[in-house]
Length: 371
Image 1 (tube, rainbow, N blue to C red):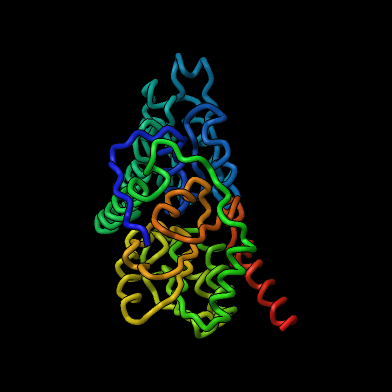
Image 2 (cartoon, helix red, strand yellow):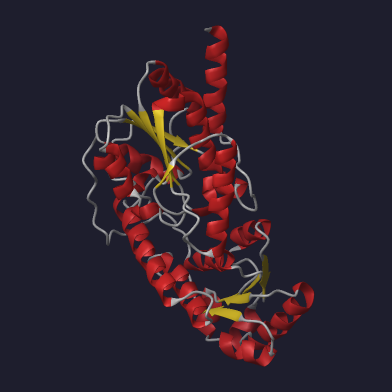
């Protein structure tokens, strides 16, 4: 394995990165907000707003225009709060600020008071100008703490995980270089063929699911496919602890664990679905127990330290085209990208078949027939 990359954490990143507003929206979903109002222009975060509606969240907008930029948008926001309650009868609603609303200085709290609703409304004063998108998560969680939806202990836990996630991205992820060109990674047929070759040669491996939140619905399919093909030749690990995390995160872990159990996949827990940046220690402890020839890491492979996988032939499956080069720099011999994974895992409650998993199963079936 190559030595771990040591890049400065204050490096300027030239390619687009996730927005703090989007991070706030997903966190509001995880907290159980049924309606989220974006106080800004109609096109702000359009793609992610539509994706979140696939997950059952009603995302509305005050559609601020030039007049709103000049005269303010508090009246439209107050009116939309009332209209949203009338239309959807949510138990929990939220408002997310945008760059526009923050610049003109609209008071989100005053709009909530003016609306006079009888349900809790989370007010997240956020914009997209933060260096780290995790700031949007923190602001949202602090608002949830202030409303009594989570306690201080959970806020502190989440902050620690976010610090670790940010560090992982700056050292080994898509924020580790000034510019990272998107790449498609290895041809899935070739990577699956090599993996099957190792399995048929009797080699032993680690089968690791270390996925972030809902993306695990597809990454877990790879875990299932490897278990199906390799059987007792692999030991499986998964970050599916349903005792930790925000409400939706815990439900997703339960759903995925249920589906893996139905497929007969046995695994050891290495954390929860929000604990992917800190699972490396558990993986390292397990890897030290016996000799492994290869490892399949699905989800966020760059969060597993190189030392934990030392001496293994590593198959990394990610959904980030900009993650290919950093993974190769870490010494991962095979890097596979599951394109468009995230949209396919929004709004689902069961495993979603992956291209790599399907390829591995098909190759195994073909070889069994021909053999």
